[in-house]
Length: 105
Image 1 (spheres, rainbow, N blue to C red):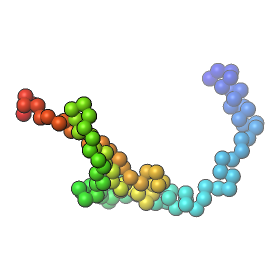
Image 2 (image 1 turned 180 degrees about the vertical axis):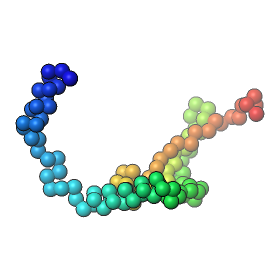
Image 3 (image 1 turned 135 degrees about the horizontal axis):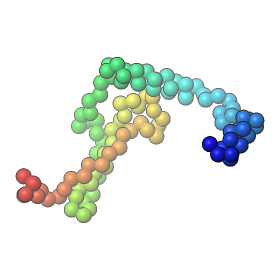
Image 4 (image 1 turned 60 degrees about the horizontal axis):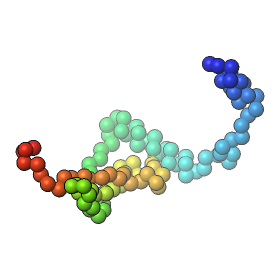
């Protein structure tokens, strides 16, 4: 490490920075963390199963662009209970060619 790196480490130890969460993380965070850890353990030991079916997919509108069909879709994440609301849904794009290439068959 360089002299500046050592100085920054020393300064960081001498002058404590304020806590980011001064009142703790909150009950919701702790409950979510517990559910997340439980889900990870189930994934690790193979007891967590998830099968995506057609009924579970929320298909958006289809748009045509540059010779392809593009459709946005989403489904509820299998770990929905352990995730923040912004991550409760998994989103993906389905991109398909409009014309089948005869040489590809």
